Structure formats: structure tokens, C-alpha cells
Length: 409
Image (cartoon, rainbow, N blue to C red; front, side):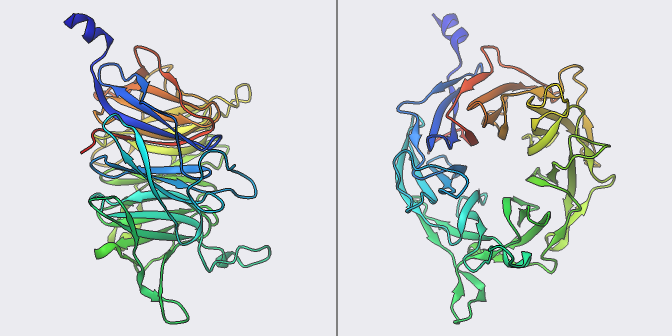
């Protein structure tokens, strides 16, 4: 009996939740320790609480999950499912997490701007940062100057006992009427942000291909450094991520030298500056295209890039992961020499990646086919390989991002 149970699996090592915009749902999975296999948690899928769920974050300890619902826009989203967030389904839905990974809706909170697209939590779980593409006073009308269409970060403090969110006003800046701003401005058309460098919050602004930095202060305050706009020289910024030492941007603009775009590596300098790493940008692997996300593994030895398509005209919809080693001294990226496998094929249209809580497996959420692709992660080489019991799992329609948690306490 003992051998038979071992062969079937090694118990649940964590939980995974995957957003989907087709039905405004959250798919929930248990992650098997022995195989990396995903099995449904009870009562899933869960409603996202709003419309067009695009980002999610788990509070440290795993008791609370926050989902950013972008809301119905002129070009995307629908009002299917239970709507607890606003008239257009826009807002941050709080969920409590049960012992089996079951989600229970608690409350919806409004960000200060419109079109929220990303969430980031500080390492202590004390503050939640929500990125809005359009700030309350921004002018994004046709013909308005580009500088007038800017986004914002809404900051919330997080109650330790209930997970409830409370707005943190901007103590550095006041409105024209003398009251404190309720948000922290960033650049044009922000798409993603990341805490890095031991106290910096970087926002990627796709409207002008720049990065907007803030220093993270006490009581949730964000403080502007001297240099408030970082020029990247990119043609089409799509993501930002970071390990313990380096920050990585993805540039999806294709060139004759690199049809698959580039990875832009940086170190974090004084005043939350980004300093270009020696050697500069790194070409994406051959036959890749449209990089949209990066992941640094838990050992900070490997970098993985999710590519939504291919530069091969015979297989333009071929989605992959490019894999690199990170030199611990110089930060230089080198292709992992897994001949014939790197880049690794994934489901159609990957959006986000995560490493499981036990650091054995890597997963992508795939938008086009509504699946999750799983891999074994070899910590000695960085190579990826198919899970032993199948690597493709049905999630929810038009999957966006995913998150994992190793415990609930």
C-alpha cells in the first residue's frame, strides 16, 4: 500500500490560482509534490468578483488572495459571472483562502484611477500596490498631449487579521484644493510594476517606453527620487521582473539582428536608478517572437522568458520559453545549451509564469487555449522537461495571470 501511494503522488505541496477573462473566473488547483501534476480544488472555478481579471497576488502566509479586475472597456471584457466590483466590474476583489485552496469572496475595493492592470505586494504583506493605466486627473482624450495621459499607483495598507484594504494617501503631493492626493502618479500607459533593489518600485510605461521609479518609504509612502523617468531605448516594452541582484525588461520590438526582441538587464543604483549591465541588451533566442514575461528562478541562477509567438513564418503561433543562465558575478546571460529543446514549447499565448513553492516545477498560464503548461525544473542545469504524468492542464477561458501559495496559516 505504501508503494502504491508513493507511485500515485506525494501530497499537496501548494495551491495555484489562474485567472480567465472569458467567463470572469478563477481556476484553482492543488500541486502534487511528487509529480507536479495539477488537480482541481473543491468548488472551482470561482468568480473573480468583477470583469476582466488580469492580475492577482497572494499575501504572505497564504490566507488572502487579491484579484485585479480591469473592468469592462470599450474593447474588452464582459459582465458574465457574479459582479461584486462596481458598475463596470472594475476593482480589487479580496478572497480568503481555505485549507483546500478554496476561495471565499470577502469584499471589493476601488482603486483611485481607472483601468487597473497590475498588483504588487511588499515582502511583509503590509501594503498592496495597484497600478491604474489612467490616473484620476489624466487627460487621455484624442488630441491631448501625451504628457497628460498618465497612470497612477493606488496604495493600500492590509489589515493583518482580516486582509481588508485601507487607502494610503500621498503625503508628498496635494491637489489644487489643498487636500492630499489619493494616488501616486506614474508615466504614460503603465502595464506592469515590480519591487526590486531593496526598496524601489519600478513601473513600466508602454506609452513612451520608459520606467518610472519610486522609493518605498515608511507607512506605505512612495517617494520620488531625483530621476523620475528612466529612458530605456526600447521599441516595445512588455514586462519587468527581477531577481536578488538584477532587473530585467523585455522589449518585443523585432529587429533584423533579433526578430524575437531583446532582454534588457540592469542593476539598481543609487536613488532607484537603473544602470545598464555591461554588454547591454541581449538578443532573444532564434525562432522566438513577442516576449511578454520574465521569471528569475528561486536560486537566481536562471532566467526564463515567455514568448507568445514565433519568428518562423511557417509556425507563427508557436509559443515558447527561452531559458538562460545568469552569471553570478557579471549578470551576463547565456543560452542554456539544451540542444533541440531550448526554447521550450508551451501552450498557446503564454501570459505569466510561476515557480512552485517547493522550487521543483515551473508553470505558464496560456491565454489563447486557456491552459496551464507545467515543467520539471532541473536546479543543476536550468533545463526544463515535461512532467511525468502530462504537462498540459485545462484552466479557464482566455487565461491571464496565475499565482501560487505553499501554505495557508
